[in-house]
Image 1 (cartoon, helix red, strand yellow):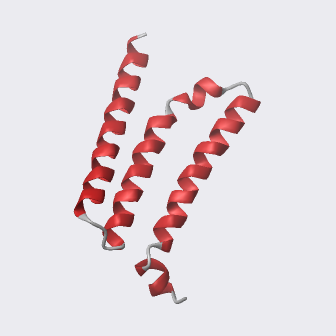
Image 2: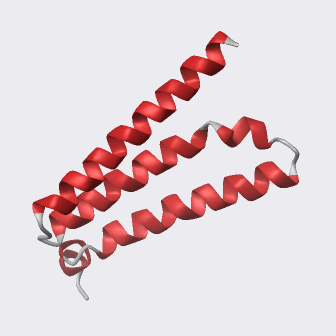
Length: 93
């Protein structure tokens, strides 16, 4: 597979999605092992938002239906709003 084929097929986006998932798992394990889970708790919604954006990009590159792109963008927006809400509530406490 050529570099162009790697990007055109969507495999590069799949790699980025795998890295986002791996980051979430690694942070969860590291936070649990080090007793600092609360420090990483706020990153969950950010990772969900990023994952949804990557899925929308994957649908776009692979020529998927617009409904999958819209679902990914909507999911990202909803996760972003949840992240903002969580940060707002934490700052008021």
